Amino acid sequence: MTKYIIKGGRPLYGTVEISGAKNAAVAIIPAAMLVDGVCRIENIPQISDVTMLLNILRRLGARVRTVDRHTMDIDCSGVRTFKADFDIMTKIRASYYLIGALLGRFGKAKVAMPGGCNFGAVRPIDQHVKGFIAMGADVEVKNGLVSATARDGRLHGADIYLDVASVGATINIMLAAVFARGVTRIENVAREPHIVDVANFLNAMGADIRGAGTNVIKIRGVDRLNGGSYALIPDQIEAGTYMAAVAGAGGSLLIKNIIPKHMDCITGKLEEMGVHVEEGEDEMLVSRSGSLRRINLKTLPYPGFPTDMQPQMATVLCLARGTSVITEGVWDTRYKYVDELMKMGASITVDGRKAIIEGVGELTGANVKAWDLRAGAAMVIAGLCAQGTTEIEGVNYIERGYEDLVEKLRAVGADIESVEIPENDGAEIVKIG
Ligand code: EPZ
Image (tube, rainbow, N blue to C red; front, side, top):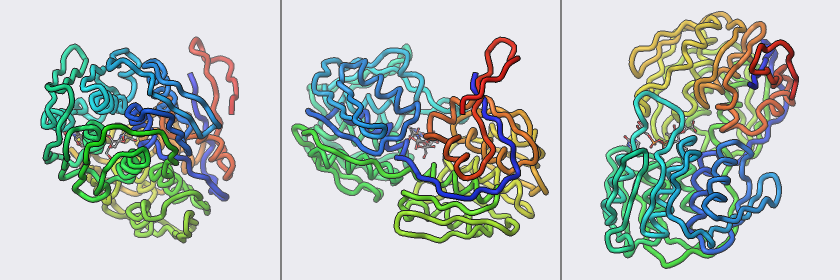
């Protein structure tokens, strides 16, 4: 088992390069299934969710060639199956994009129900299904499989109104609609940067999609998508995580390769807390030396404050003077990480979707667990801020979404290492990073 060991209390100074956006990559890679030719995708982050999705595409018969560490050539023209019902599919949430992609391409799809981080009850896909049915598909969910079939062999355009501005449903319906006969209008769609990235990728391959980034997306069906090349946008949440890290630990980080516009909601809240942010064209200088001020925060779909930054901000607010209130506006519950922070001396009360955070003078190192991807990022930030040593278990979750996290943090002065603990007795520790 791999653990991170952090000796905290050190400010961060230096430069961090942001990688390609995870939530764009995990949608655009399955979207390549719609393309009859080679897609050259650049700025792909080296993270385990991407590795897993590329292996799923290979399993389906796609040719995937590594051009360099962040560039892949993907050719799905040889894929003949519409079935992606093997168990690896259940390991990540984004595998469900294959439903829209296979249904769009073959007029049918049989895909294993997705997995992914657990935020309360199961993560529903009713809005995805609603869209497929509106476009003329019969959909059945049983035995852990989603089976969808276009009644007359090919989907038709439809007007779809989403009950929830769901990122996944917006993207999945867009994928299914690319070859549908006629025009599909989706209203009340999600507007996250990665939604726009997926639409831009599909248009670069020959699709006809307008309105991504607004709350109405219009897709005019085309007959085929040719090959082409596309570079992913930088990761808004990775960048926000490093901004939160320096806000908590203190110091000054130059965060490079970002789109400042995407960071507005995060920048605004950190400045409210007393963090200094200087914006450049594609970089930000983020510094904190004085004390942190308490704030109230509500997570909302973009352009609101992102839910995927909630655990990280809660951790920093543990060190702010006064009482802060966080309201989780997207997921039923996303506070599993609070118990871990309490082991480090935090004072947080969770009441349904609200977390009331009493600022404390300091956090102290402890042995903690990463319960999901962003909770894991919060544990890393807590370890960086804490006095003493923090050991983090469950780093496989963290490595699903953060490329070279240990290396990037060590390069700016953090005392963090990744160690391999043998499963048996954990007697000898093997340092690996
Ligand atoms: C995506 O999940 C992200 N994952 C999540 O990020 C992120 O938290 C979420 O969007 C919100 O921004 C990926 O992109 C792979 P949703 P997704 O559909 O698409 C409800 C991370 O840390 N809903 O926008 O699954 C749902 O229950 C991950 O990178 C329905 O009711 O999220 C939730 O309350 C964690 N019916 C809300 O909508 C549906 O059919 C938002 O879900 C679909 C969703």
